[in-house]
Amino acid sequence: MTLPDTFDAIEWTASGLRLLDQRRLPHTEEYLLLTDAASVAQAIRDLVVRGAPAIGITAAYAVVLSAQQHWQHAPEKWRPGVAADIAVLAAARPTAVNLVWALKRMQETLAGVMADPVPALLEQARRIHAADVEANRRMGALGADLIKKGDSVLTYCNTGTLATGGYGTALGVVRSAWAAGKLANVFAGETRPWLQGARLTAWELVRDDIPVTLITDNAAALLMQRGKVQWVITGADRVAANGDVINKIGTYQLAVACRHHGVKMMVVAPMSTLDMAMPDGQQVPIEERPADEILQLAGQPLAATGAGAWNPVFDVTPAALVDFLVTEAGVVASPDRDSLLALGDGQPGTSGASLKYH
Ligand code: MRU
Image 1 (cartoon, rainbow, N blue to C red):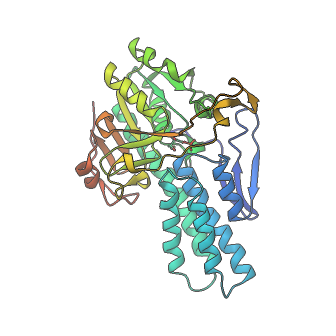
Image 2 (image 1 turned 90 degrees about the vertical axis):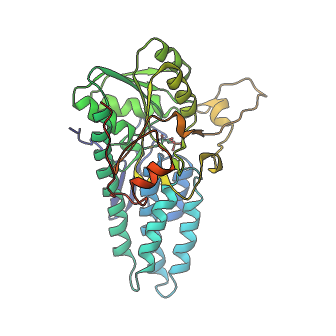
Image 3 (image 1 turned 120 degrees about the horizontal axis):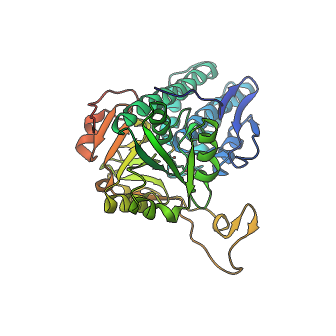
């Protein structure tokens, strides 16, 4: 059972790429219309759009914008211009593998075109977008199957329609489990410092009429100690070949607390997030963002003047702390290299063994 999406965060239009500006949510719903790849790369850097699958899809559409521009201005030498734009897009954010995954798909399409590249690229970007939504709905069903009626969940960061092509990964599981009448309570961690949980996840759940209770990130262990949740459900920015999960900073400490309290840790990520070329999580580049994201709040000084801050925005959860990895190709319990290899060749839509928990 699934719930319908009620908005488009990423929309291709005849005049350009329309992005819902996530910096301004939840109080202002404003769309930006971007018409060149450099502006899209900047929007990805600035978190206008964020979330691993969403930045991949956005970058794919940016390649279409790039091809439109370079083909129009210099049809005899458009390729180097598009290649340069792809390099800028690939460097926009370092941790989520979906960005380079989507750009590689676009490069493969580019390699096969001889004349006007725009129609084939647009078709490919639309395919990547649609496949992501389909994967999310499938993962929603698979993840919800693991949950017992009456369970409660804590989710983290934002993994919903805003972070994907639509429906969401971890939030897709929450939506499916809610629609199936299984969930007693949904808790969301506010997700310092950018507050993806408080601003974005809460906004999405409220729109869906799913009651949500926000907690500060530091309340998670108490929530577990009091037996108020049976599951922590998160997304991933990258899953390494050994099953290590790279996700929003704070995911690792949630996984540690889960294991201590016997709470199950479910990670929900499409096959496009699997990086089988990365042996383990310790080698994944962890993005560090400006100290002001911690020292200020909404542009206002927060910390004592003169204090410094360290702002890594992702962390590495060892595979041993992950109880279930849910992909569109199947569910893996206690992921490791062999079980990930068995899932498929890293392409979305591959089929693998599905495993049920209850
Ligand atoms: O910095 P962000 O907001 O892009 O980080 C997003 C996350 O960490 C999400 O959990 C992850 O991308 C999965 S989204 C389906």
